[in-house]
Length: 281
Figure 1 (cartoon, helix red, strand yellow):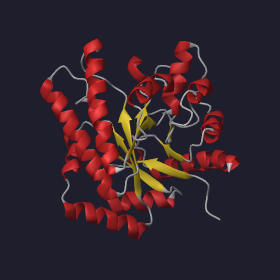
Figure 2 (cartoon, helix red, strand yellow):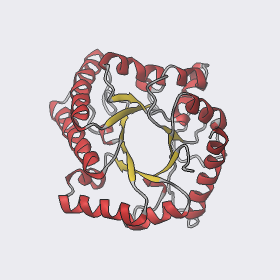
Figure 3 (tube, helix red, strand yellow):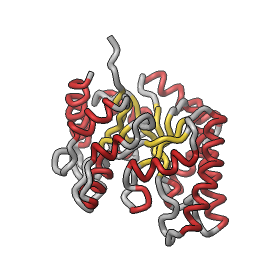
Figure 4 (cartoon, rainbow, N blue to C red):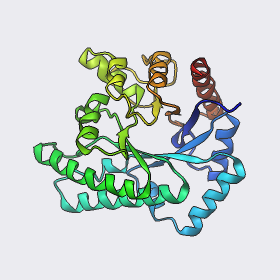
C-alpha cells in the first residue's frame, strides 16, 4: 500500500556542486520522495528560469530515470525583486520572475510554488508597498490559475508575514484556489514565541488553505542553519496539526554547510520526520 504522504528534500541541503542526477540519487538514498528546487535571489539560481526546452526535458528525463521528481519550488528570488517594490524596474523584474517560475513549473511538473511573503525586503515597507504587492499578487495568481499551478505563501522571518494568520489576510483578499499558504513550522514557532501566541492555533487559521509544510528547526531569533533536534520546534505537534488540517506534502528544510558527512544529515532528517509522519498515517 502506498504511503499516505510524501516527504521532500530542500535542494540546498545538498552540496551545490552536485549534478541534478547526483542530487536525485542522494535524496533517494536517504529515503526522500521528491526534491524542492530553489530559485533564490542569486544570478545562478535565477538563470534556471531561462533554461532551454532541451535542458528542461533533460531534467524531466532524469526524474523518470532516478524515480525522484522535483515537485515543489522554493521561490525566494522575490527577496531581491519583491512585488511591492517602490522601484518600477525591480517590480517589473519580480513579475517577470513570477511568470517564468510558473512556466518552469509547468514544464517540470512542479505542483506547488512556495512564495516569499514579503511586500519588500531591502526597502522600507509602507501602505503603498502593501497595496502594490496586493495588486501584483492578484496578477500573479491569475498567471498561476492559467497554468494550473498552486502557489502557497511561506511564513517568513519578518513582521509582514511571519504567521499563517497574516498570510491568510492576503489569501482571503485574493480569493483564488491558486493562492494558499505553505507554512514554515520553524518560522511560525519563532513568531509564536515572540508574540506569546500558540503555533497550533496559528496553523488552524489556515484551515482549508494549507498546501504543504516546511519542516525546519529554529531557535528564538534565528531562522537558518539550526540542526534538527537542537532547536525549539515541536515537530510532533506541528505535524499532527498539519495532518489534521489535510496536509500530506512535507519538505525538510535545512542547509548543507560544509559537513563532509552531509549524507548522514539527510538520512537523519528523513528518519526523524518519517517516524513522526508514520504515526499519523
